Image 1 (cartoon, helix red, strand yellow):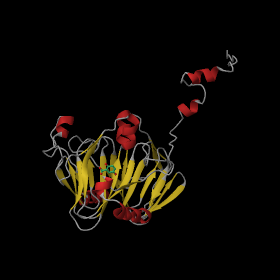
Image 2: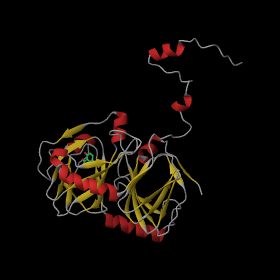
Image 3: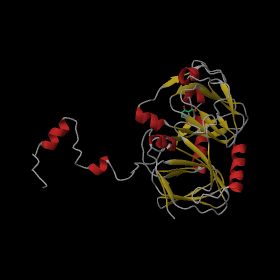
Image 4: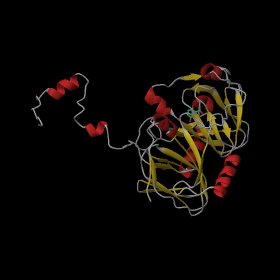
Length: 335
Ligand code: GTQ
């Protein structure tokens, strides 16, 4: 028998005064039936954002800025809230002869080089060369700085798990003591932290584009095309066959000229960067036309479908690997 006793008029106020919430009121807000991400699909066009990044080259030096970076902020967010709730996509500019000083943070970072040659990023004092299309890893809490030994501007995408770290309140940051290019202030931090040496080649930090591109061509020859993702590979850590990074799943996909993808969705909000080609992605019924070096974000559980108007290559990153570890990742395909 249902009981509907009258609620004393002051009851909810008395509960609120004790910093408590009645779970039976607005329950759907507490446990929605499916993800309701509080951020939007969005696209940053290279032709709009690149000039502003280049202008930043006149406005601020890397010494002043620490990093000369524009954060691609989701239009639904304000302040430094990132691109999705867990991830930040940023664009970084470094000019010939410049040095962005060493520092370290618990956030992991990935770099996807968009333009320029001769850039060097250091990881615990080791030099990692950067060339267009390369995917490069800066693991959590490793000292890193950037130097530019080439003669044209270098621009790359940074992907960081800032939102994830903020959510868990695990953010630590430390500025380096030295500004010498290519010499991290301390080269033992990885040993201290992970109990494994930072040298000896166990950790792959750079996945060169020419090799990755070749792999896509091999995939095209030997596998069937995925109806939603084209020919797609995931970057893996050769030491254990798992995700290349512990917090971010990274992939590269090749879409044939004229490819029309089947609608797909998954719980990992995903940031795509166009390395080659042009096309359009429908996200939640909205069309986002893209070209080379454009960056777009698909929110969690939003249905999307790619179309390629020329042969295209897209890089993507998301927090899928975290969701998989937690056993909560879901995907759905429709046709
Ligand atoms: O290169 O270390 O886009 O610390 C944001 C924060 C890049 C970096 C970003 C950073 C870096």
